[in-house]
Each structure stands twice: as structure tokens, then as C-alpha cells.
Length: 380
Image (cartoon, rainbow, N blue to C red):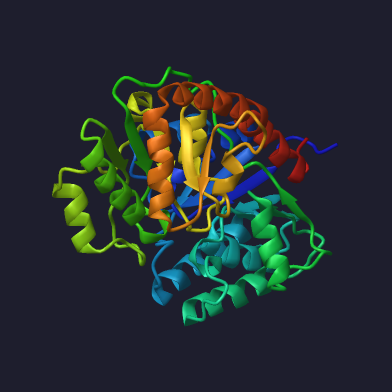
């Protein structure tokens, strides 16, 4: 039996993910334990207020998770080391690459009792097994070093493919303590069912504007269908920033100023847009954990079209009660075919959406996922 009053330090690479992806977990942990977060600046006032209401200790840093900056990373490492030494947490829970790599090494040096890094997707570094660029090679080497076997280390994955990849790459061995949970989970009380619009069919994609998310594929498919079905609408939500894999300025101009896609930029709450949508699309080949936007869409009863790729394939039920379509990566004709399948069979939009809701209730309920997390952290 683990006593209450444990000190838990959480490290992430974006403040938004703290409440969007880990909010319910933090709430659960804060009921019986003291939680601290080490995060880039919290710019959303409501997030800061929520953390304060939970009595969560906040430490901020200048980490840029997607950018290569030795100076920024060194500052991050030194600050995190100082915090771990001062707090002496019982549990250290980092997620995403830089917090996992740097934080796990530091937590080992500081003799933290339980270290539970989560790899919420392997991203670019493992998207192409033949990738030889220097950043990717260094990342893999550092990951292997940081995740070296230790009795205090429990590694958490969001899909089985990522675990198998690290075994194949000899970054992990079968002797590591590794666990697979069902993504970040989705709050079924926050994302509630609404019947989809089948009279005025519209497709929605929620994603940062980076190449590996399949932005170009979505645009090309939308452009083709728009010529045949001008009444069908296409929407896109997501930030366009200086990510290393950001789409070209030319493609951004076509999306933002053209007539094919209604680009909405980044939004604080996706629920009204999912409510308006008929089908959610994510033709990603990024190396996802389990895409959050697909879980949210399933919870609200939306059919899916996504790629048969790592993380994405977890969201489409392989049973006879299917909730969507899996398409080959970078395959625009396949994407068009499945979009037209819903356009020509609007009743399937409702049926697949209800199947997705049932699938989300069975597998991705955030309370089920958090129970898994508490068990791994030895807090239940």
C-alpha cells in the first residue's frame, strides 16, 4: 500500500498539454498527493487558475520542444536539476522527448525513487526507419542512454508499435519495465455526443500545420472533391508556427486565402467545431501516440478517416462495428475515395459515429486510462 502525500513532479514541453492532455490525471493525483509541474510559460489564464485551485506547484522554463537550441536546452537541464534536488520528488513523470531524455537522466542522478517517463509518440525521429540526419541519430542515442534499465524506471507508451520500434532499434530490451496505456484518454463528460450533420456534409481536420500530419493530402483531396461536390465543406483547425516540419508558405497561402478550405487557425475549444462537423479527418504519418483530436471526435460521435499508421490505427475499431476508415499514408486517391463513401452514404456517418462513441467508452475513457497510470506509478 502506497501512503498518501507523495511528491510528484511532472515535466512537459508545452503548457497547453498539461490541462488538455493531463488535466484529469493531475486532478486525480492532487486529491491525495502534492503535485508540481515543470512547464514552458503558462499563457492561458484559465490553466494557471485551475492549477492554483488544485494547489499544484508551478515552475516555468523557456524550453522549445520542437526547436534545436543547445543554449536553451542547457538552461532547461540546469533548472530542472536544481528543482529535482530541491523538491526531492517521490515520483518523476516526464512526457515528450526532451523532458523524457533530459529529465530521466537527471532523475536517475538524483536518485528519484520512481521514474515513469511517457513516450507519447516517437515523432520524426522514428517516422522513417532509414532516416540518418544528425539530430535524429543524436536523439536516438540520448534516448537509449536515458532509458537504460533501472529498477526505478517504468516506461509508458501510448501504443504497442512504439514499444516494438524501440525494441527493434535496441534502445530497449525485453528486460525493461514497459507498459502500454490507451493514449491520454478522453473526458466523456466534457466531450459529449451530438448527432452529426448529414444534410450539409463537412469534413474537419484538427492539426498543427506540419507536413507529417498530412496537411497537403487533406488539401489535395478537398480540392478534388470541391470540384465534384461544391456543396461539401472542409475546415482546418491548428497553429501555423516555426516548427521544423511546417508546411511551405506556398501551401499555407493556398489554404489560408483560397476557397477550398476554411482555415480557422488555433482555437481554445474544439468542441463547437466538432459539433458542426460530419466527419473528422487526420491523414497523419507523424508517429503519433494516440491522436487526441480523434479521441475527442469519437467521444462526440464523429466518424473518422485516418491513416493506417502508428497511433492513428489505434482509433479505428477493427471489429465488424467499425467507426471509420484507415487509409495508406500519403495516399490522396484513397482519402478521396473514403470521403466520397461518406458523401454518398450519409447514413454511415451516423452509424460509424455511434460505433466510435461506444469504442471510446470501452477503451479510451480518461478514468480508465488514469487508473492504468496510477497503477504504474504504484499509487493504487
